[in-house]
Image (tube, rainbow over all chains, first blue to last red):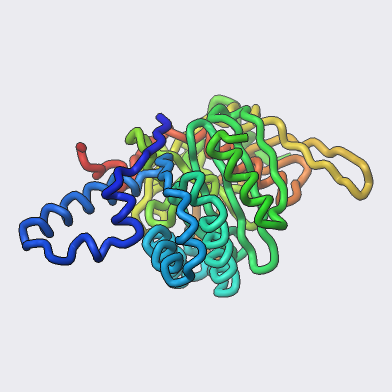
Length: 192
Length: 160
């Protein structure tokens, strides 16, 4: 099932300037807010949920605000990337090499750039796992479509799966630019 | 030609680790398998022949430590995978690959426990990386929902 979420105004504020909301609140209000936050987090952790962020240009003009926005929105993904550093040779139990530090850094840089480029269209938290040759793999499912992105130290490649049937159309290619990333994202969320 | 050929109706078990991002919960409560659950560096994908595991997927599960589940797919469905094509732009040629499952029993290997049920999914001829990436996407599509042992993340999922 495909769901497009439009956060409430409160959620929008929480995404950008969460600490201001908490200031001045009593303990019980904090507890309620924390409970709501927990429920929201559980919901957002499932994939296929497209989070629409406001196209607020101030986020992208002010580096410090944008940095906070990115950290908050990509926090789980950054944690997943950090977790890859702890995986050793054979982490998949089928002899895969250890994820390489340089590939993980490249992946972090690319996913940040992707988020910056497409956040206003809506964001889906990626699945993160190790790649076959020491790289990083991001995966998104949305509706019937699936996008897999392989990030290695020197290259980024993608595979598009156009349906859920085993005979579904599958296409692939390389990501060379921000424009390529944006086109793929628009394809994933059905805007192309 | 390998001995003891595998018939199309034989079931194949594949162990899917549960703590490596290979099982992803979807919004509707279902779970999808990552294509990376099938990636192997040599482009030959290890499976167990169910018949030779006494049709007991637990035997496939316990061969390695760590939380995991087991999916079961039919040999015939694997061999029926098509659409594996590579366009060689340099030579202007198009290569097509078929999929097979071959017996590959393991005995006296210093890194692996003995496993007479071991078999491998492979392409004919051997394929380049791009084609293998397509193959594992198709295998993930084929394996979705075909758990014979659910991994802990599914078994222990909250009711709400």
